[in-house]
Length: 575
Image 1: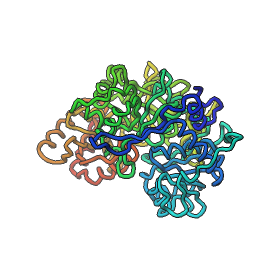
Image 2 (image 1 turned 90 degrees about the horizontal axis):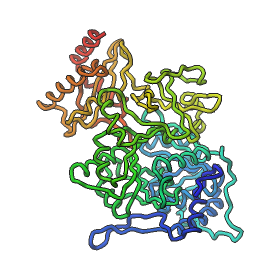
Image 3 (image 1 turned 120 degrees about the vertical axis):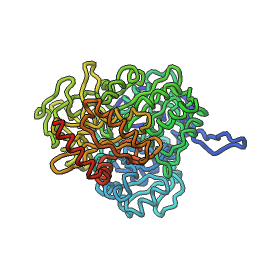
Image 4 (image 1 turned 135 degrees about the vertical axis):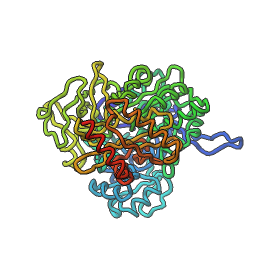
């Protein structure tokens, strides 16, 4: 199967090709309750069923006025109905808009109203949110429900089925440079931004993901579980089977997903590839480490959205197939993904350096992906010629370019100016992270550029400090923030312990141990303030990235005057 040979992102053609060559191949498996003996039941849909529904619904979409370049919000968790409508939207050439409600209901309204979408696909609760919070025009929006059409003005996806005419399928009249999708960033480092992907960009993402998920090395179609809703397209793009995860996306955040339920479905359906946020993988790894749980059908596990560390990768590698591997992907919503780090290489070669304060190694760039390190610049960079490229080992800002990288934001020239760099050969994306390249061509990340602390003897970066504290056996995670005090910034390390405690003799003992750890490493020597938090605030999408602005406000409120004065004296002495 040649993947998108014309650079047009059309999953419907892939489903049709499989339906014609292997109609009985299973496309989608959905959990469907329990049998009398307690085992799970499943509902299976073949490619014949999927393709037939896709082509008939595509005709209904055109009748409704959803066609080429129609901006269509897609707010539905993985399901068979979601797959049908999602593929039908590619058949008609619509532009799908992806935004996570976790950015805040009013924020969703503000951002969608700026884009002025014409259609909305979602579960009934999403349509209720649309009507209640004004997610787009209530009057002109065309509503399609994945489930019962409970909200006035919406239609169920099944009601869009139409007979496919004898003269055949009408393919979308779109070009490689036409818009295919708009994906909002998480908003964890500022307002969520509408990343625009052209048809050719989205095709390139899937070609690249076929590499990282090892689809290009398989003799048989994969069985994939799309835990992250936007990735339901990946398994289908390979003509494979996707298994709907046992997750209630309305009520369960990633942190609350039941790892036992995931392992049960993975085993029942023989899932082979899994992409998930670090917090989900951490909970799976805990079952492997503490209870000996396994998932031997898994060959490829990919984590993204936040760093993966040894305490997660080690147990996961023991749980999966003998020849399997755990990979950490690095990138951004605007560059999905950019680099990859294999678990074995990380365990053997780089994690020890991370624990010494040298940053987190995120591996090497993918084929046709270029990475540069340029000098740190807080404002816009209008041209690559105006900024100095740094040498191997020098810390600067990470910029990336490739055929899959988004080159602009939709209807947002300000964000485009702030985050893109023009070059004679194309556009570079500023990932917003600081880092450096080593002699092997591997990329090391030191933390967000905007999260660095400006100290008198040089900047301090989070990912060069936090792993030192995270290595303590009682620490679940840590977050470095700066508390302004006059003309000085006081570096504060905020600690979340495994047992959630914040006071008592044991906490006092751990504080002393952490301060000794800080004093033993050059990158953390300036840290003299340690605070304990019941639960560090994390991003709403992945529940893995630390929300540093919120944490900094908390630290400023809880750092005592005595600690402030002591920290300032220590900084002055070290300077």
